[in-house]
Structure formats: C-alpha cells, structure tokens
Image: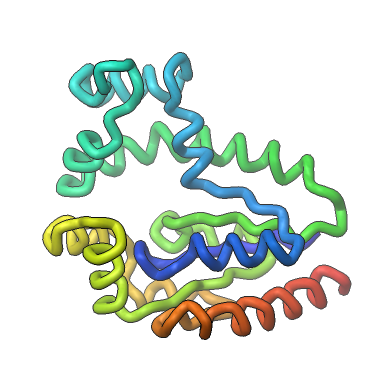
Length: 199
C-alpha cells in the first residue's frame, strides 16, 4: 500500500485532482468529508463542538451551522485551535479505519487540506501538493464559490502560505492554468504513484 498525502491551499483545485486520481483507481480518504461526518447530529463530535462554542452554532434543524461556526473560528486562531482539537482526533481515527479496509496493493490518497499546518507530512509515504498562485486562489474563491474578497483572504490567511506547502511536497501539480492543463499532469503523477506502489 502506498499512502499519499494530498494537499493544497483553498481554491487550488485539490478536489478536482482527487476526483481524477479516483477515476484512475486510487482509494480516496477525504478528511473534509470525514470532518463533516464526525459532527453530524447525534455524534460525540457535535456534542463537543456545542459544549465548546455554545448552542448558537446549531442550525434550526439541529445540524451544525457551518458558515456560522466558520465566521467564529476563521477570525480567531485560539477558537480555530479549539475546534481542531475536537475534530482532528476523530478524523484521524476514522481515516485509519478506512485505510485499513483498502487492499494491500492500493494507492491510498489522503485528501488533507491542513496537512502542512498540522505537521502531518511524516504520516505519508509521499506528499503531493496542488499549487496555484494566491491571486488564482482568490479569483476562484470569489468567482466560483461566491465568497467576498474579505472572506476569501481570511480563509487563505488561516492556512499555511505557498512556500510552507511547497517545502513538504515530494510531487507538485501546478494548477494555475485552465482545467485542460491539469489532467495530463495528474495522469503523470498517477503513473509515478503506481510505479512507487509496485516497488
């Protein structure tokens, strides 16, 4: 089994890269998706978040009000750290379960947005970074995700900068250009991962 950490700044195009890798045969463990699962209604995770941040972080239907919680934590590093202390161990445990279920010859892609920030590079056989210039990220967040420039800047500022991400990369996928330039690069990276998994 080859364990790959996949990361990139918000708006860099990591989701598209992971989608392509899955289409080639990778097993995907998506930390963001798991992070949503571990705070669904009735979970210990949601109870802990409500205990830490108060019932105002719940929507009327009892689910987590993600935008509301985001507004609280992305402007306050201490509150973000509190949230991470609750969610990250739960995500780690679930990720380990999913990895154990993958076959021994699998290329397992761990899609981890905060891999660099949380010093997780050593957990993987290699790290792939999806890279885009900050101005590209900003444009995508505003144009494609409907964020205000201020919201986009706050999200970007809450993550490691480009240099720190690139410093942990074993392989880099440049996603500064149009979508059609991405696929050939991802295919090349996939060939490299399959070759390493076979060693």
